[in-house]
Image (cartoon, rainbow, N blue to C red; front, side):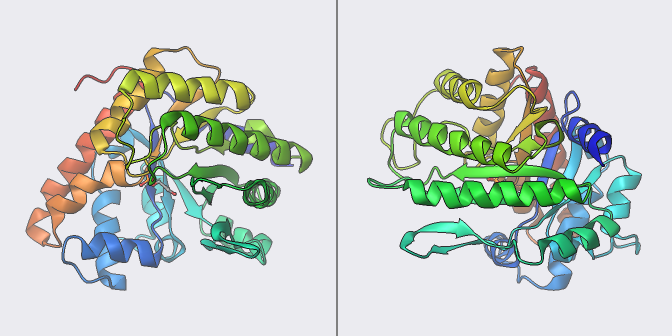
Length: 333
Ligand code: 13P
């Protein structure tokens, strides 16, 4: 029913030279970010910080969409405009994180499964009415000696596909995010092997559950060595391994792949995306849906002080501009 609208929105999110700002930190995660700059997390400080990001003039030249947390979707900018309207008036598409977080997996409690399917159909209708046109659901896969198990991969892939099908029914573009974490000591080869297994399972489930690939986006991790691994791969190696893995597993009907940054430094997240686009053309658009890699310098520059808001906005604009260039394969450090 919503087929053409879904296709149009998915393509608009990966239009040339633009990507997505992930500003959908849950209440727990935003508290950690605000703690890191010595700011207490209250509804007001969260609103002030998001207002700073969403009113940074010029960001709309590089940012196609913003993923919001539920609280933010229903908050207003300083001038009283609801945040989704503020974004839409700039030509930026409002999105919403709809999962309820990763919880210990019964039967394999070292691993996690993402919850939030119960009542999702009703929530999606409310979010659409509030202006959300796309959504995000994140499955979390950790690498350890005997993990991930096929069980963990399967339940997360199954939930991602159930979420995606419900989104499309509601006319909302699903961003399907199976994140293989980069926190461990594993090699890049091991990350490639696990990412391959995960994407294989995810696309099998999407097919079984009749998700229209043309009306969704994939948000994967890059194929990269774990942070604790003594042997870190170079930029070209990360780009090649990531592309090899994606080409094997992601059908070209998917209009775009928008990477998460996952704890990479902001400079490296930009360099990796740029390198992949320089190796193009690719079967899909390759862009970004970064949280930390777009926000970290802005958060630090703000420090919770009104007099620093302009400087924080400049820091955010710089990251947005550089990643916009990387989405075209035209970034120069
Ligand atoms: P990072 O880019 O900080 O990984 O955040 C993106 C995101 O939305 C993770 O779910």
